[in-house]
Amino acid sequence: MVILLVKIASAVVYPAGMAFFLLAVGMGLWRWGRSERWQLWGRRAAVAGLIVFYVFSNGLVAEQLGRSLERRAMLPDPMPHADGVIVLGGGISPRAFPRQTAEVSDAGDRLLYGAHLLREGLADWMVCAGGGGELSHIKQTEAEAMQEMLAWMGVSDEQITLDTKSRNTRENAAESLPLAVERGAKSVFLVTSASHMPRSLGIYKKQAEQLGIEDLEIIPAPCDYMYIDPEQYPPLYYRVAASLLPHVGAMRNSTRIIHEYYGMVYYWLRGWI
Image 1 (cartoon, rainbow, N blue to C red):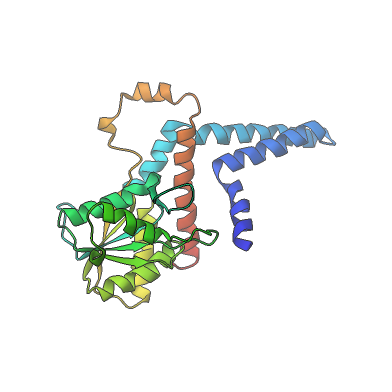
Image 2 (cartoon, rainbow, N blue to C red):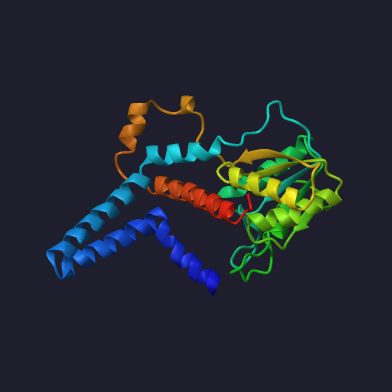
């Protein structure tokens, strides 16, 4: 129940929830405020809500926010060889009616890229990290769903180790690092979305330190990029014109990045990164 209440309350700190809250409070004060002062503050709050909505649904703003995280931890060049791969959950929807199989979600690139590293001979095995989640009643865990999909790609069960207990990124690290060590790993690729990589890499390095795993090299292998190099984009004037009106995709990307920044601050305050 506490987790559910926290999730509901935390929605207000994201752009859409914040804009709605400011608009709702502002319109209420503007309409029913008992004094001109309260009505003035109502108008200001309503305008602030519109500004929040417009700014974070702007494509150029979302792009700059995305770049601020996605370029922080890049794959080494040239590409090294690692003993194994740790793939974080968050990109798979486990099998549950009416789904007949496990399915990939937006971040499903994580699993595909992990399988690519194995197929290219850059690593020998994979740890799939992902439990059921605090509020999930689905029987199949995310790690088990990943194993199901990896079988379709020709990855054998002998190459896969499952972490079915972890519910968040910190628990991913606490559970999957010992599993990698049991495999005899001296180096591992850490695979997750590019925007999620800075926080994940910090957590994994901190957990390795706390677990006394000193000789394990953790190599960032980000994927699921939202934004490619600017040289591949249309001209700037076209992008500015296309961003004049709010766009739901930009709001979604802005929210995703802000979520990561909130997570980084929270994990830093807890001493987890």
